[in-house]
Image 1 (cartoon, rainbow, N blue to C red):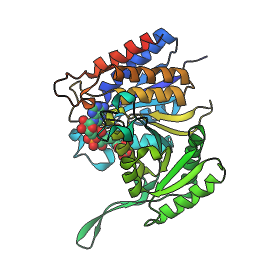
Image 2: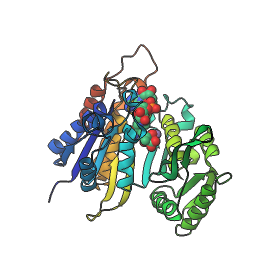
Image 3: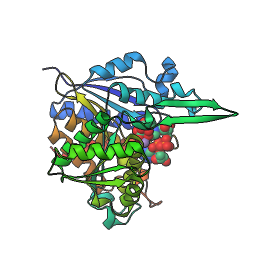
Image 4: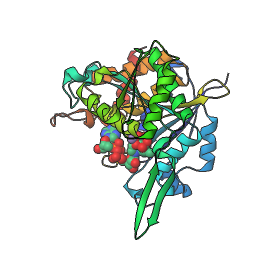
Length: 367
Ligand code: NAD
Ligand code: IPM
Ligand code: MN
């Protein structure tokens, strides 16, 4: 049998720093668990622009279409702020999502016990939290036409279009209902049906899909209220299904419930390939963190936990994923923390690589 294939795209800023720690874990899995991946590496974002003049070369896109899973670090940074919009680093990531048709973006927000004291919210509000945001990822205002900056009279107008077809809403909804069935059978759909026609359609389609999942308790909420409820009483939620833009914002918000944006992983999944595995890209929810890039300060947990999601969702290696997640939890419980997880100025934070090494030590101890 051939090894599963992985394309690694470290990207920009802290992307390569956190990805280096994932590579250690991939190495550990080969050495200690006999699980070997065919790993290739390529450029995305600003790094690709620097070499090719585009944020994702066609050859890289073609490779991404062929592999079993893509692992991405982060893209973007101030160096690229003045580039033409069409070649900005973020366009590389959006092209991957669109052309791989990764419509279902799973963003789990879990509060590890060791971090319950650290969240900016009170401990009893976040402890034990385990929610899953399913963000529609290939449509909505991110991709809708018309879009652009146009002349209108004597001034310019910036246009983006929120556009959703029934089938786009439906396929994402099905993935959210399927997840809800495996979890606590509660699904909250968020839109703004009070002000947007796309929200009215969203609510109708989700309600219709819900008829196929009678065991799932479906509720609807306006997304602005959803943001408020997420910080007021997040444990009322289990699975949340929402659109591309609301999902982007709500997941950053949910990240802070876990203690840090540096903790939140994600899986972007599409339709099954010929081998039965879904098209898939795994990446931390955070960006390239230009304010700390190059200093060895980044928390690698979100990227490491994204790899755990790859083990679970692409490679059917649930036990290995559990082992890796438990190792991260142990490291946090042992008090080994990067700076984003500390508020005591007297404590010396662990570096990115020290954190990664501690995860490896915890994995060793798990054998
Ligand atoms: P960001 O997520 O990069 O950073 C926000 C804040 O969180 C910063 O203070 C940063 O230091 C901190 N942070 C983020 N990840 C961290 C980690 N792993 N460890 C410790 N601290 C961490 O968001 P931003 O500053 O708004 O964006 C910076 C660039 O990243 C922009 O170009 C943006 O477009 C891009 N971006 C990319 C992605 C992605 O690649 N998926 C996601 C979000 C933003
Ligand atoms: C994310 C990011 C991206 C988004 C950007 C970098 C394109 O913020 O993955 O959350 O807006 O989707
Ligand atoms: Mn985002």
